[in-house]
Amino acid sequence: MIEIKQLTKSFKKFKALDDISLRFQSGQTISLLGPNGSGKTTLIKSILGLVIPEAGTICINGEQIKSHWAYRSKIGYMPQIGRYPENMTIGQVIQMLKAIRKDCRHYDEELIAGFDIPASSHKMMRSLSGGTRQKVSACLAFLFSPGILILDEPTAGLDPVASELLKNKIARERANGKLILITSHVLSDLEDITSHIVYLQEGKLVCYKTVEELKRSTGQEKLNKVIAAIMQKNYRKECLSYENDH
Image 1: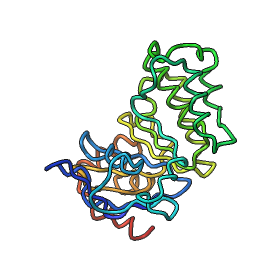
Image 2: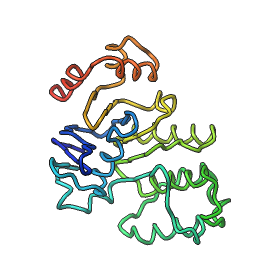
Image 3: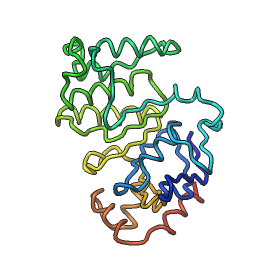
């Protein structure tokens, strides 16, 4: 569904992405992990078309995104910090986006109901807490039933009940064949919903493997310990062999 070949992006002398090649398929939940400055955000923005790499290609459903911008309608994006018109209410923002997306006839409002958004629909965006703003971002990401979901720190600021509701929704969407890319620093939130790990460091691909493969190769069961083992040892050659086999 998403194929990335030899992607390279630099900001002046800083190489944010260094010859990255990856292939993501429907039904996967990919956790993009790595320290700050590793290239996660640049990779996401490149997929979204918000950053233009100087080398390499990105294909979605077999078409290069450089010349087919309509692909964006197939992606639901939840930013780490949602920016919305501050003088509009929650309800107005949702209705505005529905009006813009006239191509969509079926709305996924499961999270809107689960987070009880209608009870807060009259509230102005400028008055929202960080957690409520995050709920709005989650609702909008899923609203148009996209085939691909990109979720940047999705549980940040959410209370435990809301966090579990969102994780359960992610798990159901994966079971429905959606491709989901997640970045998060809270590894415990990824434990039960991740199928694959992509680990980046200094713009380079260190590891791309299934969670089960990494558990076997590191001898660890908990995701945080698996990631610690990746950081401590050089798994690069072993993990990149996954690309040749899949």
